[in-house]
Length: 639
Image (cartoon, rainbow, N blue to C red; front, side, top):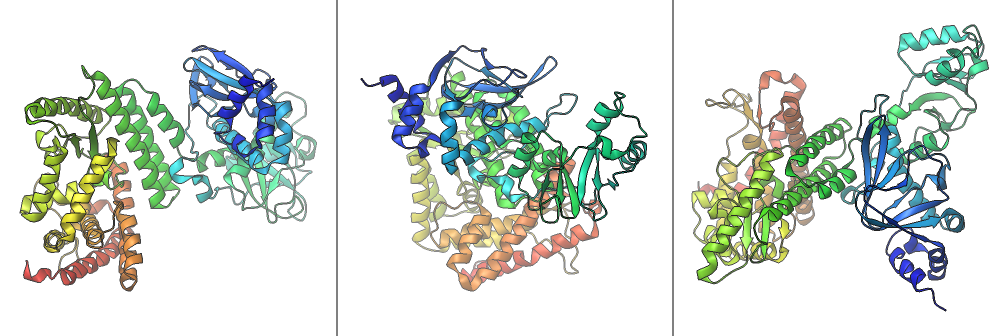
């Protein structure tokens, strides 16, 4: 007789890793042993400090939060949705739980007996690897709490960057404090205090590590009176030490520190105890190698019920950004991750705004972001640029339909302002009736900009043509994109006029190679890094991808990568433009974080000589790309 419950469980499990790598008969065997748990909101699946159960878990429906407790404070570590595993500590370590699992809403959870599943872990490398990585992702949070219970965020991979930790090397102490086995505890304690370190490594005559003493050893063995301060260090040292080569990965360090229940790893020349000590890696070093946690932030965004609470998330994004810059993560990865979080924030604000409306949207619609967010290169909070497209309706219903979406846009722009996005001074927002139109009117507007270009139309098209779909009916955005490329393909006149705008941007340097600064206004005597440097590179990349009919590539760096493929004869120029843009966007971001603003207007007297030289090196590609536009589109005749 068939076990229909087991088959239903099997059908669910096979959708998710690591179960999708198991044979059908094996998965059915496991499914037949699984317990189904119905967990009410607020009910515990397991509690922190309790012994591990003989099972681990996967969420079938609902959501389970993982929390760390400190006195009366409870801090969210992660949220597990359908298909997410948790409670894996029983498989890896078999010790007490370091977190509590609490249902955030009414949930169905499958409890999988470890005894049934362990044979498949040993036989299947993919299963083994996945479980270790999942455990490591949750376990990182073990290192992100201070003694006072203050949360320090960490970084785990998200879809856009896969495993970002592999892009970072762990920074460890290169010259650890060492001593000999017969040194006294009093002597090494004084040395640790004077050097402000938490450990000392005991080495032999060949500088090979034979043991380690940490602050914890001094507390548990000396402060308790178990040993006298005159004891030799070999009496209280922990041995053997755990050693690794300097090529140790973040994942390896995580698992080693947790599994061995130690706070320090010794880094040796060849990774063994019998080779020379070259460094020491602590759990604090591992913490520093992480930034913030984009995965948890995005999950948290999706569950937040009030716009005001999203402001906290955006502040966390700034911390994440600062950490990535300090760790010198590749620019494109920083841009991708911050863009994913920005998009998630915008989507959640739209969802909350729709819930506030008296009735749902009357017709299909599409919400677009423009400018830097549309190019997916907005790292700092700037002003809003967005637009609404709604489905064509009969003329008699147009005004009421538009009114609905303007009201919705007011809620959205207000929400974005609440979390830190300033209102656009030029009102290029969906709340402006001019930028809240039906699809056919948007198509007419785009065609008008291209067929009868004006100075205003050229400026607006340079903003609106860098649009990015965020929410709603994506086919509307696709139709607008088609209009742009059809218009461009009919002739180069429109592109030439865009090119004129690009080459007429104010120069960054004067005749004597000095920085040209603003002459009046509130930004007098500052250098406008956006207008005088970055916008030329942005405009040129946009014009050239339109010229080559390259669709679906909005980001400036990716555009130059694509152009280098298409025009190998100009590869060097496009690569230098990309390099200059990476330097400029990081420079502007650092300035913005330092001065708590957009980073656009820079006070030159605050820069070092090296910083000024770095900026000036970026201006050569700016001039070169302007010259390419001038020649290709014969702009001398149009100026």
